[in-house]
Amino acid sequence: MKNNIQILQPDDWHVHFREGAMLKVVSHFSARINRRCIAMPNTNTPITESNQAVNYKAEIQNNSKSEDFEILIPCYLTENLDLNDFKEGLKKNIFIGAKLYPNNVTTNSSLGVSKIENIYPALEILEKENKVLLVHGEKIRKDIDIFDREKYFIDQELNKIRDKFKELKIVLEHVSTSYGIDFVKSNNLMGGTITPHHMLLTKKDVFIDDSINPYHFCMPVAKTEKDLIAIRKAACHQNKKFFLGTDSAPHHINHKLKNILSKPGIFSAVSSLELYASIFEEENSLRNLEVFSSINGPKFYNLPVNKKNITLTNEQWLVPEFIEDNNIKIKNFYGGKKLNWKVKN
Ligand code: NCD
Ligand code: ZN
Image 1: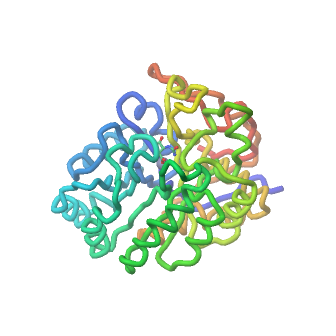
Image 2: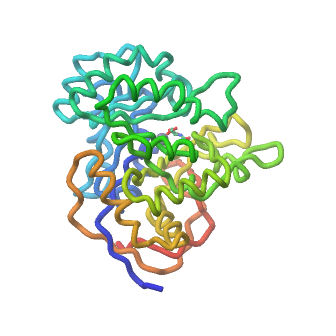
């Protein structure tokens, strides 16, 4: 077994940094590894205007304890966006693109979109400006099973967008089904982010007897073993359309109660790249890690690949169970378990 591996510095194309005290506690975990992160705009007051994005970017960067750390922000799409500001924000690269949250699908999505046609004017601008649409791909309806939300969204919403905006680049975020993987593969201008937890958990790790494990509860929820295998294969062996996006989403443990009201979101920033490395090793494809973590993403976003290298050492370490700081307590994904790879500082 190799003792060290060197790869180009990664980027994380999907992270939640939150605000205030929580932001202060979590930002440096992502900055310790990544050169760039996409900061998701589903803050308590969502980032819908360019001036908010400018301030939010500065807040994260200032708290990251890292010089060369760059935050990229997509605009949170609502049905009554200021389209002039949106367009200007894209032109000035204040926004890297736009994020579509269907209404009430996940944490802080109550301003999200109810009727997809109502955001067509924004998507037209996005397409013209050659910027990216990031999609939380789940359709919520009373009669749709929680495990079928991704498939329904693809069939009933994403297909419509795909047909109408043929030149628009779209990322299906946190792909959670083999159906989603196939959809991404079938289309030239589609990419997909893959989280570590969707390669490690199935629904059996989330729904246990008549309760849920709140620390394994996220949206989209983990699916079947067949889905997990398809996602692993896409990340570790398909090597082009899929890239790193942890969806690291911290919640104070008081918001992660042992019932269905628990806030969805899994916090993995403390061991993000190490988790991916362990999974790639299990899949006998460590040699493909760099393509997934550091090359496919920038290529999709039309940004330069990072220049510096980072080193992962083959040493065992224990992921701490919790992060406690600043009156914040967060449970780490994989906390209390050992990993075989560690990023060298
Ligand atoms: C995320 C969060 O907590 O902000 N939660 C999650 O379950 N993934 C939002 C999201 O990306 O869905
Ligand atoms: Zn997310």
